Every structure is written in structure tokens, then in C-alpha cells.
Amino acid sequence: MTEFLRAVAEHGFLQYALIAGVLASIACGVVGSYVAARRITYIAGGIAHSVLGGLGAARYLQVTQGWEWLHPLFGAVIAALLSALIIGMVSLRWRESEDTAISAIWAIGMAAGVLFIARTPGYAENLMSYLFGNILMVTPTSLWLMATLDLLVVALGLLFYKQLVAISFDEEFARMRGINVEAFYLLLLCMTALTVVLLVTVVGLVLVIALLTLPIAIAGHFSRSLRQVMAISAALIAVLTVAGLGVSYNADLPAGATIIVLTGALYLVVIGAASLRSSLRRSRAASATVESGSSR
Image (cartoon, rainbow, N blue to C red; front, side, top):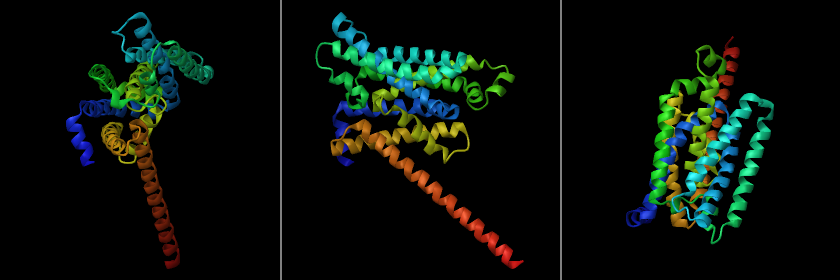
């Protein structure tokens, strides 16, 4: 780790990577908590995979039409928001078709991305790296875009905290309180879409769901409120991102995959410890019951 810290001080791309990881962790902690509470992880997965279509289209227009200003992340944002709105509208109006819509968005987005990449002249390694993350290739332009998305997502998440909590835990109660459940549900899906774009930069669209859910599950074991889950999970993701970057740099491994492996390992340790504590409590309770019966 000492070698990694020395490299961070010398190389700008590692500094950019660390900043990107911190930015993504903040939005992920906030939105991931809502996603877990609302149980819409599968929707987030559909949105994540549809992003490849937007990335491919933006890169294609960059190269073939000379639109140098069109950063691939712009295409990712448009694709993610469109997917979120389509899935949201189908879910609200034809709930029985929700799974079909998610599967269609998932498949069409991936297929469109592959086609655009195939038709784009030149070397497509940079674009394909979005599949498994390209945090070490983050540019200052990408950081500004990420910071803008991060600020927007966190501001919305905190500004409408009560409404989003209400629709995440109890829709009927939210309606009784006069909350426009449909509008805030669509807002939550759009926030999820923007967060997915942030995470795609860090771990890639294939691994987004792991980083969006596992830290939230870990934080849930040490929290008593949604606000605490948000704070703990955001800090946890930031720490895991830094640790993953350090391990991947020293071992010459893909950064995104390393971050997910560390996150998964920590999750297994936490649930293992929680299961052990639960077993010990049950054993003690059973022993106390036996002793109480014997004394009578």
C-alpha cells in the first residue's frame, strides 16, 4: 500500500481515479439505500445494461460525425434516463408487463451498443472498458460530469427525503398523506439511472448491481435508520474503492473487478458474523430455558 500511496502522489490518473470513486460512493450510498428499501434492484440492472447503447451511440457520433463535444457519458445519461422512464411508465400502467419491459430494455440496449461499437471506425478498447469499469482512465472532463451528476442526485435525494422514504416503504400511506406516488417513483428511477452512470465509470455496467446493493446490505447490519445506512454505505464504498485501487495497482489486476471482490468478501464476512451471533443467542436462550425448567 505504501507503493500505491507514493504512486498516487506522482500520477494524475490515480488521483482522478480516487476522486471518481469518492464521487460515485456518495450518490451510491444515497440512492442505493432507496433502491434496497423499494426493492427495485432488478430495475437498476435493466437500466445499467441499457447504458451500453447510449455509450456506443455517443462514441459513434463522435468518430463519424465529428461531434467531439459529445462525451460518451452524455450518451449514457440519455440512455439511462430513457430506460428508467420507459420501465417506470410500464410498471405504473401495466405492472404485469414490467418484467418483459425490463428484459427488453436490457437486451436492446446491449445489442444496440454492440452494433454501434462494431460500426465505429478505430480501436474500441476505451468504449468496451465500460463493460467492466475504466476508473483508471477517468479524465478531468469525466470528473466534472460525475461531480455534476453526483450533486444533482444527492440534492434530490436529500430534498425529497421524506417523500422518497414514504414511497419506498409504504405506498398506501404515502397516498394517504397526499404524496404523488407515481411522480416520485419516476424521480427515484431517474436518480437510480444517474447513479448507474456514475458507477459504470468505476466498476463497469456488468458489475454495477453488486456495488449498488452489497454495501447497503452491509451497512444495514450496523444502522437503525435509513439516514445511517446512507452515511455508512457511502463511507464504506469510498473505503472499498480506495482499497480496491491499491490492491489492483500492486497486483496488476483490473480495478473494477478487484473492488467488487473486496466488497463481496466483506459482505460474506459480515453476514457470517451476524449468523454466528444469532446462533449463539439462540443457543444461550435454549440453555436458559432448559436451566429454568430444571430448577422448577
